[in-house]
Length: 315
Image (cartoon, rainbow, N blue to C red; front, side, top):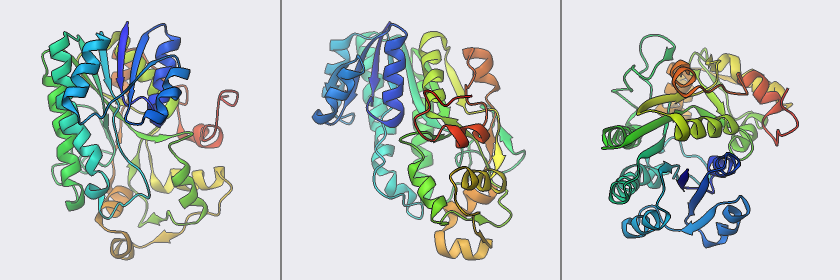
């Protein structure tokens, strides 16, 4: 199969390109930086330098590749996380989820592409009422924090556009990534005791190792049908459970605890909501319909053995 990966040099994109090539697919992968083209070639892909917000460039690249499937993995997060000003931090990623998605779908339809698989997210986006674990049929949060409204709108746009397109549109809602290239900043915060448990730490998170996110994406490309799939491990857990475990796994002191009122003043509504009201996600649909299983079934083992290069470390 000919596969076009838009965003091939990110932490997930590189793993995805490698796995697609290993599965025998002919891969064309994009990067915005000419300096990273060599990385893609070394992985076995044909590199294309193009900005995902350049509609003409995207259309030309897809037309030349003539792919059977397009995978949308374009994001643009860099620098220090700014959760207090979440939408400002996510501004370019939000544009890639809206304008970039439009360009890819237009290119797909113009070139007769049969399938588009797009990256979405499950975590703070989930409705914060009801049970602790959500399925794909549960609604997204109708009342996100003020600082996340634009980001929520971008996620909703991408999901509607991809699943509503006249092709096989697949949305993968990845959980919180960890693994080399994804979790270093969180580990630094834990070691510095700057990631506290807020209140009782009742917010539930779902995690997914980057390698498992890549295998799920390959499964979606090869045999997925239209729809939305949560791509998470088997073990959604509250912050009060996973955060101390992470601290122990990386040799850090136990996390501090902050009352909600103090955390709200210090860090803002986004952090407080995520750490106290978050909801996890079920992976039952992905297991059933994509015939996929995460190799790291729980963050419990993943945090101990999967935060660095894990080729030989997996139990």
